[in-house]
Image 1 (cartoon, rainbow, N blue to C red):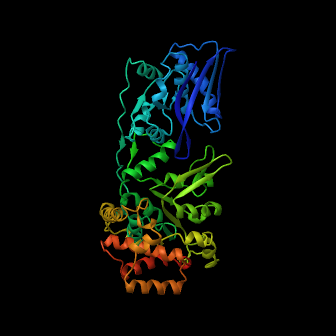
Image 2 (cartoon, rainbow, N blue to C red):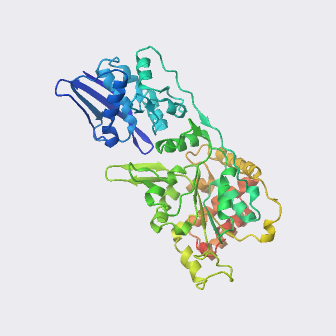
Image 3 (tube, rainbow, N blue to C red):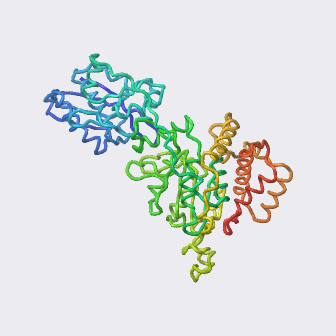
Length: 506
């Protein structure tokens, strides 16, 4: 009397297939779960027992053993409740012995038999499609999982619905994909008075996904500018939305019945731990840099973050992925984010204001920004000083461009890049181009190359800095619709690279 059902165990964004084997044999009455389960999985026996009792199904006075194969793969989470119940119902001959063979099941059971939503329905649907099975999940997860059109998704509200479906009494209708509408952006770039250079830097950063550092006195508008960045970013494309939603599904953040085309905007506090930023902790969960995949990671008070946290950003910025290493597993998460960092020029914040600066000027500025290491500073494509806005300018009516107008230019630049890199996957934007591809798309004219060579020699640019200037210049040319990079494009890219005194080092 052995029956099987199928589910998944999560390793990062990868869902690995797990076979739930159930045996009902003679012996002392017992209900045990083996196969490296965690506490939540071990407690499933009590939830399953209570849910079956609520359906007037009594367990026999026999030995019930549930094995989660492969046995050496850690099993975590409450989503194993439903497949364990399915395998048990098949072993008790309540359902046909092969009823659960055609589905991948996941869901948490309440004591009265209701199916509660769980994290990870979207990657589970992808795993079900790869194994040529349907996905059986709670009804609340159906709209999310159905976005994977390659497999049928069955969303059930209760365990009784599942029982009636497999016995043919009341088949469950396939779930329909749901999508969360783009939220209206109440914060408009038009609200920012002055700061035209910073606005230009944000437009370039949004167009080519170039990392940006804003340095200015308290109250100069750094956070205000960063908060308006989502309003000029284009919506997620279909592949990007799928990638981002898989991470958010694992983190349990898809709670609106579908996925969103809005780009994520994460702004962790500077007291956040390394596990919170990079990923880790219990179950090696994704961190803020992965939750910001295909979106924006805004780190205010950048030098106040622990040095160890800042240094761990260096490799993910370059590779676009992070590996969370544990003793028994290495979990890989994607993290191609746009980093916007904001910092005061010094500890007191008033380095350029002689009336309010502290007695340690200018040493306090060097010490404070010195918390950002040279290799990390070298990874910022754009560096902008944000000066305080004059009080008289604050009384003037808003006169800048609205976010919608800037977003149109950003969208056109992104379309140009999409067409350019159509045959060079996974490259999508200029900041990801490198090697021969970068030489092909970002070769400046003779005057531009002469200027770049002069700058590289005079300021001692690193090879990384040299190539990042080329990428920014390519984005500036795309914003103008220019097919080739010319001297003005190089000059503007260089001006952003060398905008901050200390940042001029490469």
